[in-house]
Image (tube, helix red, strand yellow):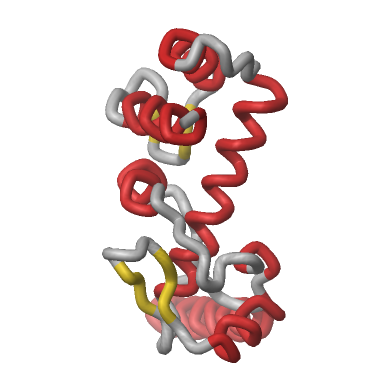
Amino acid sequence: MEDDELVNALYDLSLGPRWKGDNGFKNGYSSMLESRLAEKVPVCGLSAAPHIESRVRYFRTKYGAIEVMLKRSGFSWDENRKMIQCEKQSHEEHCKLHNEAKGSYGVPFPYFDKLAAIYSKDIATGEGAEGFGEAITNLQNEIVIEDEMNDEEEDDRM
């Protein structure tokens, strides 16, 4: 029940620009979550630090892990059961490289849709990211292009 209210409160905060920016929540949002939880679930006794922040971090991490899996072939989302669908072997292989995905095989995650509405623009999934080798190659290519442009400018001056 506490998690339900926490995710609902987080969702409500994400709708307004006062607490949610382009790259995540703004400072002080956890105090608002604490107030909302105290109002909705008075016996919970959760405080912003460390309880609420820890749960928010957990939800963000799990959501991000699922997003990364869904970008890969062989992984899909079962809307009815609210869980990742894939071969167990595929999941185990994925978890070797993505530790945060451990424990998600066959386990429902009912908050996925709401967290998608909150975090979908904030989570880096690796899509479009360049690796170290690619970065070096791209930098070398930029240097070559820049040198060629400088050579052309010198030729034009002469």
